[in-house]
Length: 568
Image 1: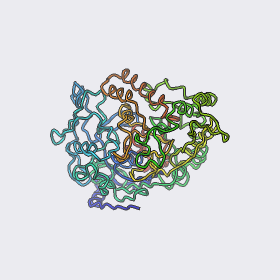
Image 2 (image 1 turned 180 degrees about the vertical axis):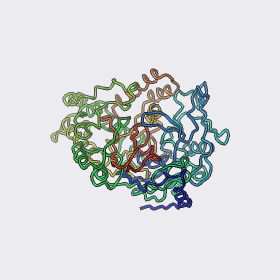
Image 3 (image 1 turned 60 degrees about the vertical axis):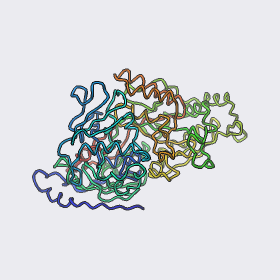
Image 4 (image 1 turned 135 degrees about the vertical axis):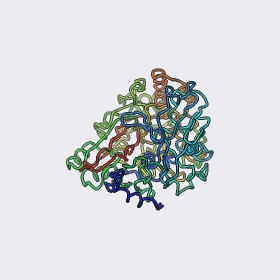
């Protein structure tokens, strides 16, 4: 297992200052122990789209601005939020100008400048780099440092929402000096930088073991001299959601466990120990099933699960896709796996309310009879084994997801419902660290999608889903050409959709934008390759002794870790 150590030359000196009055609170509360049952494989969110990497990296590297628990944007490295009113956003909406806070230091003691911001754009957009967050920079013509602390982002055409680049945890600022030799195809080769980025956040990487444990120490150059309260962070990965929750709620070994999606009755039993609580907030995270539009036969080699493989022999039939969706009882999935932490949905964009469509509610009610009729009418006939076939092609699918008891429960229920309509389903689960991993050589990642059907959850980190919707464009489909890092994991492709996404980028006004967003949502769902099932709260288990760990549906769950402290 890869094992990288990073020496912190200034750490001892920084901690020795903790006794001074101005630094009385920094590093006073010892170690905070965090569990991610999906282990972290990198500290560079530009090389992995997985939430575990984004979350872990967020305590080290930061964007210009982030979102609080109410969805309000606030400055992190920026001096303020640019608007049309304060002159930061051009009246023609062709540019946005950010001011970096004066006096900011990287964790190595060097100055943070606008050049670091401009370089981050060059890094993510460098040809051959396979940047997982490239959609954040869609429509950007150039990013330039106009002086030491001023960075100007110029767009190719007027934009209504200019807060995509460098806003939120998906596009943090990286240090130019550290990553200057890591552009393009060299990006994945910069192991030391990818595992131990120099940052501006409250903590720095001390020791990194890929897919196992990361330890952090308080950043001696963090901008608030009284924070963080904790001297160190231990972020352990692996196991499963139930074990993670138990380690906080029952045994008290850990302080915080993220993504503790487990069966309601199991959670209730753990809470009776009285050592912790569950905090959750509904936001944009939707558990969804993807149907592969492309052929996935292993004999296809490098073209497998790409456009060059040709259409899927069964799932390219819209009647099959519609039947698979309406055979699912979403209410039972919520009751069995999520309880109060889930809601049945047919939307990819479930919130804010102004953007939530009712145009695809046809999928909310299970209808086995209608599903069978769709398949009968489309010529899919049941054989002696009860499995439907047409022109020698069977409705027999490999259905994969990550290893998680709730997901395996969902798989089993879906398999039974699909059996009722003559569909054979083979179930497969893959360890989360592999499934959501960034290794381009692995055949088991969700972005490679070497299966007929797969399931996972994701959402968007802002109150405006324009950038998220842009990830479903045809040119965002993962492939060998981009190192399998494209954001369009579903492989949805519709030129009319692409044109509407482009139109959205130039539309202002919440009502007008809402109408287009709903239309885009409906195109994704009505296309049939994307089957939303449950909008999820993102539950985390929190020890009673841990104070100020505020759950944030719009950012990472570690978004305010600098303010966490030990209760007395």
